[in-house]
Amino acid sequence: MDNIAQVAAKLDIIQRTSLTLYGRYDLNKSIIWMVEEMGEVVAAVRKGKSKEDITGELGDLLAWILCLGNILDIQISEALERTFTKEVNRQLRQYGCLKYAAQEPGLQSDGSEADLNNA
Image (cartoon, rainbow, N blue to C red; front, side, top):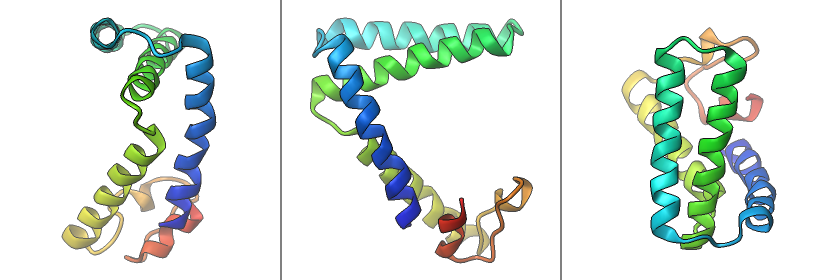
């Protein structure tokens, strides 16, 4: 689990950069723009847009997620760490290992949390 915390903590720097760029924008407008960006991601995928176009849309969505975190004084790194930890625990309970780790190059799962330190 330590690796998850280290990786997630790197988001703190990105989130602070987002605060510098966007400030603490209006909550309601930010929610609307975040939802619009999600719609643009979905539309780009469904329309078979290029990887470059989808990458741009995902970046826009992530920027508004970071903005929302700043407005609500929530560290996205903490949110992500909680989500990843919850999913690791779920997979270990349900499958006895990280179900998808063996499918990714460089990741192996022997059913222990130590697998995450190699991610």
